[in-house]
Image (cartoon, rainbow, N blue to C red; front, side, top):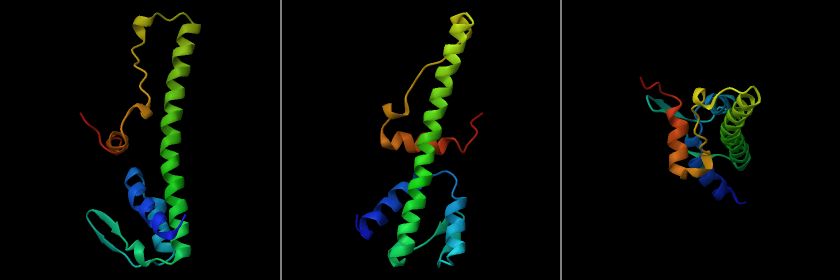
Length: 122
């Protein structure tokens, strides 16, 4: 994969990540020129060296994959709870679970779902 494709992937995948602490640490550690405002940190990835772009690409992929892994683990935990309930003969009236897989949603819906975890809607 060429460096331009990696930059596009960084740009597209970074919005899927809810916690950017590792990315901010990466920026600070490598002393990458950036600007900061109320919306976050901004860097011009088109001027990063190929080495830094590769490292940032790998970091962004790792962080975005962890989001998918944690969602899949939550689904597995729900399925285990259902199996335990059946094993101990807990009546179904006590369990109200609708099993919806994250893969059933569109890409934009997945992004919105992950972003919504940052807010508390009362």
